[in-house]
Length: 190
Image 1 (spheres, rainbow, N blue to C red):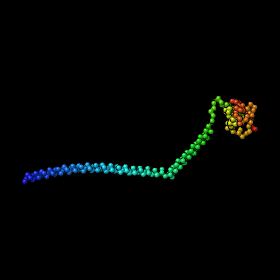
Image 2 (image 1 turned 30 degrees about the vertical axis):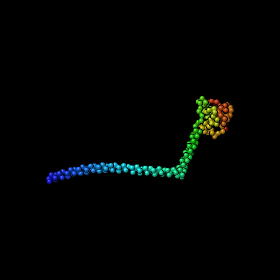
Image 3 (image 1 turned 180 degrees about the vertical axis):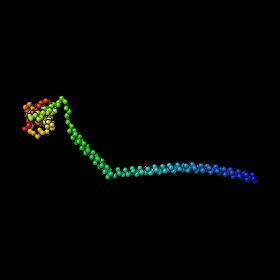
Image 4 (image 1 turned 45 degrees about the vertical axis):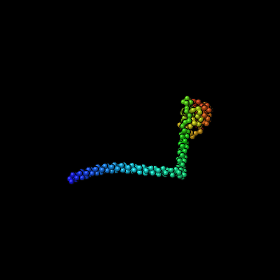
């Protein structure tokens, strides 16, 4: 009976070891399933976040599309663009005027140094003895204005201007008055 008990004991011990092995395999499999389950849960969370982001983007696109599809919104955007264009056109026109004004203040001619001449002015009372530079194409009134800028007190007098015994016509050109470089203009005040 002892042998039988030993055989039963060995069988029971063998069964117990087999059960332990099965349990260990099951625990390993459970652990693998837990890891797989956790990985799948993480992927599911990533997919949920992607879905949420895509839904937000879709809503934004729908909102933009609704704005574009609304005629009032399009008209408002067009009107804003038209207003901005008109404003910029006004700025360009204003800048063009400023440029024109500045250009008008710049002397318009290039002068060859050889074309410059000097006319000498001499008053009968000897208060004026001055040379004024000019061009043959200048009107005499322009030359006279240069003189009066230097001698402002003669602006208020009635002056007769003579060159070589001839009266100078103020609104003719220097050349037309037969005035040459170095000529002297006599100023007679009245």
